[in-house]
Image 1 (spheres, helix red, strand yellow):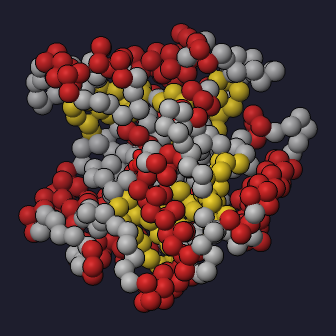
Image 2 (tube, helix red, strand yellow):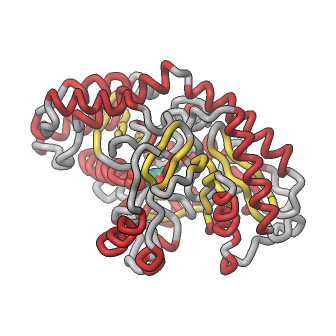
Length: 456
Ligand code: PLP
């Protein structure tokens, strides 16, 4: 540890002054937070000197690994050169232009335009508004509803929290907003009927989606939003045939596909983007997190040429596209993203995610595949989840009030590895930095096995 901290004083000051996000307010106010001070590679260290392997990559975002000075160097240069200028009303800066060129080159051929913001939530909000704007310009102003999936996570602003399909993000806030509807969760292991094949399950879900569209009125449904692999909702991998069946339905009813790549993008699945892994042809793509590996808050929302053409022609008559943020195209953030992309590319971290990811999944299955309380080990590349089960033969979950997932994560944390509890999905999730080594993957498996043995 390079710096000494007065942890007790910091904890008191934190409790006295900070409302923490996604936290039981009383808990942290009483006990004080855990304060993370430093990081290197896959490891973080708190102010008391305790180090752990961060197998979650912060909040699914630390793709290149902690403590890379190249990012700070690039940000300093951009800050010294300009620091900031807005991108409203026709202004731009070299960093956002270079980044945009580089990003659209990685998108499918029909996607060539990007809009910058600061978070995954604002990327989804922006795309939702663009759906409304686009359909308004096409003479279909009533085509506004967005269909998301139960248990999905798409953010916490008013619109993106509505897209989120978790009750805890709606309760006490009067959400979701009326424009958002939710359809079934494609979790084959838990949701399929006895004897139903993956393909039959996918086709049933596509029929349910179509039934919902018809019940709402296709003329009122503008878009469908989905992650390639649902992250915080349980690391749900799509069952066979799911996206091809869903896309057929969307096409039939002139409904756009918003692909939320906030977690899956920038290498997590062992490819640049999840839509490439699962043969999705998105109309819009939301990215954030891994775009800078969390070093700077930046999002990039992409739109197809078809949408762009309508916006361009429409604004000739309507005037400005009246949407944007003070920090859209921030030059320091764009410089951070460029340096982050350099590291991902030059160090072949995406290839490493595929390679070490496959090794990790195999090791997990070998070590824990027969465990009496593990129903499923799922994921792809360097993202995954361990499904806990009170009884795996009858597929009965644990009683949520016992907080088994959180207790397992606490025990594994004591053994030096951070996993993430996903209580709604009764699962423990992982999404480590893409620089993870096989040795570190072994540490993840070992701590998981020992920690689970202590609790279940
Ligand atoms: N979309 C997905 C798939 C996410 O997992 C998240 C955050 O975890 C978001 C959107 C929201 O991103 P942010 O927290 O940057 O607003």
